[in-house]
Length: 584
Image (cartoon, rainbow, N blue to C red; front, side, top):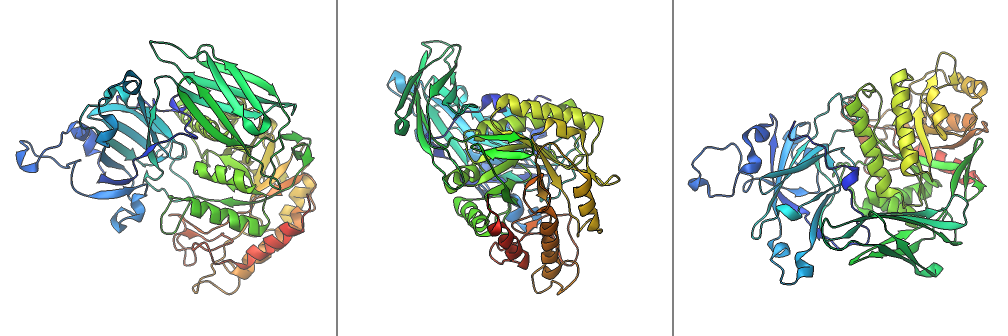
């Protein structure tokens, strides 16, 4: 289809750390469009006009009428939009002062890049009636250059966002979290020089003796090209020239940076200049490797004391903030965590930045969740793009130690091929981190058994003995029957506990039952030497359509803390007591 190019992808990403931007957050004109009338009637071609001056009838006026804030999720704004799935239109007039004709050649050569932090799920971008492209994926940022299509006077930006669940998307129709729709992360406009730095990947070398840097420069089609970039890390006394050929450069710099760790979250300011462009980032340097069944951080074994988290809020939906993320990390610290699993999709990039600052290790993943269409080439294309976008966005973050490529997929030939491709993609784009997936147990053999594990560094296991699996003794049998040659992390376990006034005092869904499941899980798992961590499900109760019994009422109640993000359940203290007793 002409309006489904998916041309806004990992190849158009732009490094934006340390850059100044113009925020496009705030009020946008808005209209839900259940039947995709706007695409058929080409609303994007409409011009601003007084209604009395129009000569043809129209179903929607993009330039006046209802408005909503950006970022937001439409489900949280009006009750009638709560379960809406389909297309919605956003329209905003760009600040005219940004595009006034410049007098100097240097200013007139500016390029304008739009960044949308996340829009769920397919976002089509139009400027002044022209289709510029679209992006697939509800949780990763995308970028589009506006330069050549800007008018001198007035510029109207339109976004058509569609959150319909389909069989070929990642995730597909069947998920276990709420399908929020909308532009729910920040929208920004960047003004960049004619030639600019498109990407920088910086890390500690595998041997630990040097810092390695990869640079990509976006070159002008005509005019001079950048042949050198300059890297500075003042605290390490580094000032290094990097040769640029065909827009790319790489170098290795002998260095002994202080190692980043949860106990010592040491960050260094990195400055890169190329031509008229300059970027900065705060980067930690550390090593993470697998050795047998051990996970080694900076050469020392570590046990991952973790918790799983969703990006969900009782009031704001999927919209988050520094305050919300800091509260999440503070609760994790209170639990005694050194590790978080960010499930089941890429979270806001500030989560990794703050984890860098506060000293947490992270498992990040893409939503290859449950029954993906593993035989569909377009589905694999979607998954690979989301994975590369996540990696390119966060691979300078020391806190991120694991890229996860899937969750609870059945062991079939097509799934193995699909997931093996993703594992190879992760290592190709970032060979410095571990690759994992949340695998399934062979319940017939009561054994950890999955062909995918041969392609992973860390085996994630989701198990709910004491909850969905009634016979808790089976967990003992699995532990005894399994002998993996690489580390296992219990990526999910837990039970629901409704601690509201409507919750039961005992039995299923009671706080007492939930806490008892945690005690039994801890008693069993800590005896297994190959288990090197756990991230129980989950920190906060979260919204989900499929959970509708009298205790759930539209929420998954497995949170150690209720949906108000303050009321702790009994199991919180059970897990905290265990974690605080562990010594690395």
